[in-house]
Image (cartoon, rainbow, N blue to C red; front, side, top):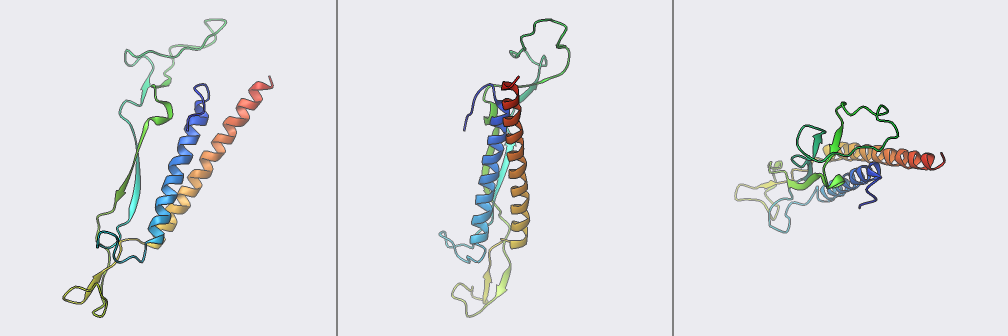
Amino acid sequence: MKIGDNLSGFNISAKGLSIQREKMNIIAENIANADTIRGENGQPYKRKYLTVEQKPDAFQFIGSQNQPTIRLNTSNENHISTSASVINQTPGGENNLNSAVNEDKTTGEIVYMPDHPYADENGYVEMTNVNIITEMVEMIAATRSYEANLTALNASKQIAKDSLEI
């Protein structure tokens, strides 16, 4: 979701909201499949998790490389110092993050159940590697991060509204 070039606070918060929503969807899928012994591939369900990382060279310091910089228009050159280190976002704005859904490769608990249809020749069944407690902790953290991004979005909205009232 792209809101506007002049409102980067909105774009950053919107990207944070969408990442946390995606994380909560993955956690919900893990919880729903916590008891799935065999998935579509015939193997026990493997826990999924979301990784988010910044793209290389997503942010730069002004003057650190020969990149174009954004300068504010001022009525007096002495109002804003240009010698301060300021972070300049490169083109792409809120799209400076890579997110990927990964599978946890650890094995699940192996339980002795000789009468189970999926038991091996020794009577053991491999369960999923989803831990409900871990997933609930992750869900709480994602919910709080979502709420923090929502608060930042509301603050940006209030700043934009107050600036229009000047």
